[in-house]
Every structure is written in C-alpha cells, then in structure tokens.
Length: 221
Length: 123
Image (cartoon, rainbow over all chains, first blue to last red; front, side, top):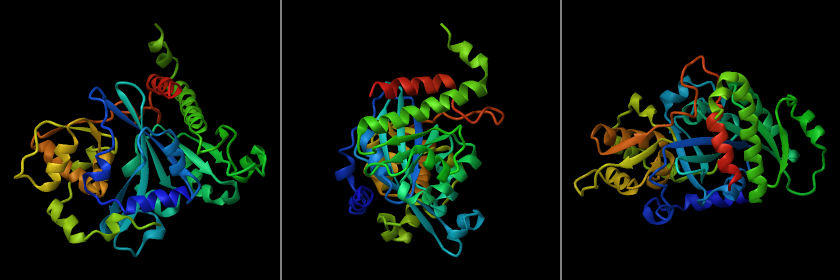
C-alpha cells in the first residue's frame, strides 16, 4: 500500500542533502507554522491523504524516547523497552504569505500516544481516518482525542463502494452526534481538501462559541 | 512498525552529536517553529550545525530540518538550541495557534481559523 511504499522509500533515504534539498523552501515572509494531525490505523491512507493535498512530497521524520522518558509515560505497551521510535510523515500547505500548515500522518496505536503532548501540542485539530473494514483500529484514537479535549472529525476513507451507511459507522464508532463524520477518497485532492475544510469549520464553530461574542465583534469591520 | 533510518543508527553517534546532553529548554522548539539562519556556515563548525545553517537560508520548520538531517526531533532541537544561543539562527515560534493562557479555550482563535479556511478554500 501507499503507506508502506512511502515509508520504505524513506528508509532508503540516504540522509544527506540529495532528496531533501529538492524540497522547495518556504517563502521568506512566512511568520507562523500550524499543525493538523491525520491519525488512523496502519494502512488506512494517512500518507495518501497527506500526499494528495501537500505541496511537497511527504517526508518522514522520527522521534526516539529513551528509557528515562519511557518510564514516566503511561503507555503500557512500551514498558520494558530501552528506547522506542515513532515515525511519522508530514506534508505542507502554504496558506498565504504568512501562514504555513503542516499536515502530520500519525499512527493511532497505543504505543504512539505517549509522544502526543510533546509533538502535537497546539494542533488546530485532528482528522481520524477510518477504514470501515477495521473500525476497531480507530476506537483508541477517538477515545484519546476526546480525553485530550482536542477537536476532531472522522473521515471514512472509501476503498471501494461503501458497505455501510454513515449512520452504521457512527454507531460502530460510538461517535457523539457533535462530531462530524464525512466520507472521503484520500487519493483525491479535492476530497482530502474538503475533509480539512470540514475540520477547520468544525473547530471554528467550537472556537467562536468558546471565545464568546467578543471574539466575533473584534472581527467586524 | 516499519524500521526507519534511526533504528539502524548507531546510538553512540547520536550521543556524540549532542555531547550526551539533553536540554529542557529545547522544548521551546515546536515541530513547526520556523528557523532562519543568521550567518553563513563555516567549515570549522560541527557538521550538523553546518548543514542546518545551509538548509535554513530560507525559513524551515523544525520537522523539515530533522527530516533533512535524518535525526530524531529531540536531537535536532538540542542542535537548534545551540545555534540559537550562539545567535546563529532566529526562530519564529507558533504564537497564535494555541491558547496562550491556561484558562483560554483549547482552540485556536476564530480569527486565525478563518484565515486558515480562506487559505484552504483557495487551494
């Protein structure tokens, strides 16, 4: 699958300049980097989604936790290991002269989440990408996002004609009615773009309510 | 989990790059903090510092730098701290994306989100 393909390409990454230097630099005027995380099970199409909207070929990077760090986290799955490594892909969208959005494809498995606070604090929101053949892969991610109070939407990546109605998916995920659930084809740029727009619209609604009418008034001309 | 380059990396080398240090203040470098070189690299420098300065002639996010160097985020942050202390780079940290005060709502400000929406719709 795409996921595997892109990672093995990265594994062959020689490290030095060659591949990485072909990545276009940012505009000199850029002031602020923003984050959106696409989270989901293995092979669900996270990298595919990042690739379809990114202005650069998705890159991969890694983080390691040493034994000391592992000891204090609560991810039971990593206990007893000296170090643990998490790889994640990212892409980039220049939104305007000042803002650049980074999209991260992050694994949703339990062993990953101890890094969440360190890496993804300040994220605008998350897209949980779901493969309806393996709905259970998403339960943990949804649970953690709710717990972290991070706004998110769920996108069903259709690998073929859908076999379940969207309501059935909502039931299977025990998803709160407040959380948007959309269909997408992660391979298609317009479809992935629509998912991101839906996420930001959702967060915008939450933010306007939370910041109160004063926030809206500031924006009035 | 697919093994990446770092799993084949010699831990001694990672240790040497940072001199075995960890720095709490390295956490100020967010994944998307933008880093800009303020001077040219010189051959006398540690090779990783050299490569960062070369790479950051225009702004680059921390995550891009880590990927370029083929080093973990945490090691990259320590190298960036060294360069920041020496005045060789400047950093543009994300300031508007997260709530600043603890009692702020856990969302970005609606104005910023509106800007993001406009940018995405224009793609």
